[in-house]
Image 1: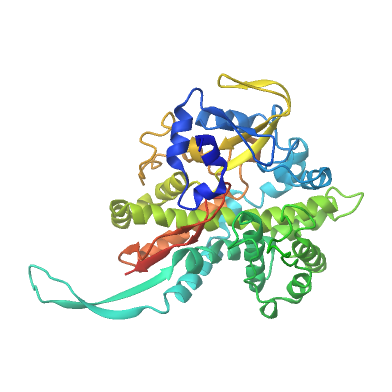
Image 2 (image 1 turned 180 degrees about the vertical axis):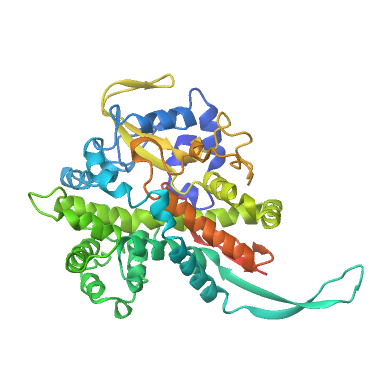
Length: 456
C-alpha cells in the first residue's frame, strides 16, 4: 500500500496513528503529496510546519468556504450550502461577523472566571472515579527495615471513559448553558459525528432520556435509527442529526425566556430571524460546532496526555517532582498527541505550496500531526519533553490551528488539562498501564476509546 493510501485509510489508525508514514512523507520531495480518494477526487496533503501555517493563514487563496473543511466532500450541493453556514466553514469577513461577538467569552480573563467551576468538576469526577479504591498490603523493602509493610491503595479504571470523557462535556455544558444531566446527549452526538468511520461509535446511545431534562426527552424522540445495514444517516448533514437541531431550538427558546451568563444566552441576545444578524442556519450550525467539536478535541487530548506520561515514566516522575513544569507539560502533551490530525481547504486560484503547483478548485489537506512533528520546527520531535515550552512558544504547535480560525476554546482546553492533571497527580503516587489502549477508527480525530490504567 502506498504511504499516501495508508494516511487516508481509517483502518491505519486502529493500531495507532501511522507516524512513520507521515515522517517519511514529510521528507520526500517538498512534503506535499497527492492522495487518492476511493470515493472522491483526491487531494494534496501538506505535511511541513511552515507550509501548514501558510495555508491556514491565507484564506483568500485557501478557502474554508468553497468545499467546507472536512476531507470528505458533502454528499449533495444542498448539504454543502447548509454546512457553509457554520463558522468553521466560512472565510472572512463572514467568519469574522460570527466569531467576533464570541471572542469576549473565551479570552484568558473570561476563562479564568470558570476556574473554580472547572475545579469543582474535576473534584467530582475524581471523587466518583476513585471511590472504588481497594486496599491491599504490599511489602516495601528498605535498608532501614527490610520487612516493613505499608498499605498501598490501588485502582484500575478506564481513564478515557471514566475520567477524561466527562470533564469536557461538563465544561461545554457550562459554556452553552446545557443542563448537566443532558451532557451524555452531547456525548452521543460527538460519538456519532466523530466516530462515523468507527462502528463502535457510529450508533452511540449512551444517554438515558429518563435521566435528562424535558427538552432532552423531546429531542431524543427524533433520534434517527440505524438502517438495515446498521448504519446511521450521515451526521454531517442536517437530516442526519435531527435530535441535535431540535434540542438547539428548544434550548434557545428556554434561554430567550430566562437568559443566563452562558455563551448561548449572550449570542442569542441579537435574536433570530430575517432581520437579525444570526440566521437560523447559522445558529444551528454554531450549536453543532460547540456541542460536538467543542468537547471532542479535549476528550481525546486528555487520554493522549495520559498516554504520553504512561509511555515516558521518567517524564511522569519529573512532573511529580516539579509541578511548576505543568504548563509546559500540557503544551507538550497537546503537541505530542495532536487530537485533530487534519483539516481541509480548497484553492481559490492556481497557487504553489513548496514546489508543488496547486490548481484552482483542488482540495488541500493540512496535516497538523505531521507539522507538529516536523524537525525543522521542533528539535527531536518524536521525544516527549515536558520542559519543551517552559520558556513559552506554545503558539508554535498547531493543535489549535493558526490564522483566522485559531480555536476559540484554546484557553478553556488548557485550563481543563492543567486542572485535571494537577489534581490527579496530587491524589496519586504513580500511574501505570493496566492494558493496551484502544484507538478510534478515524483518519480525522486521533481518538482513544479505552485506556486502562492503574492508579496508586
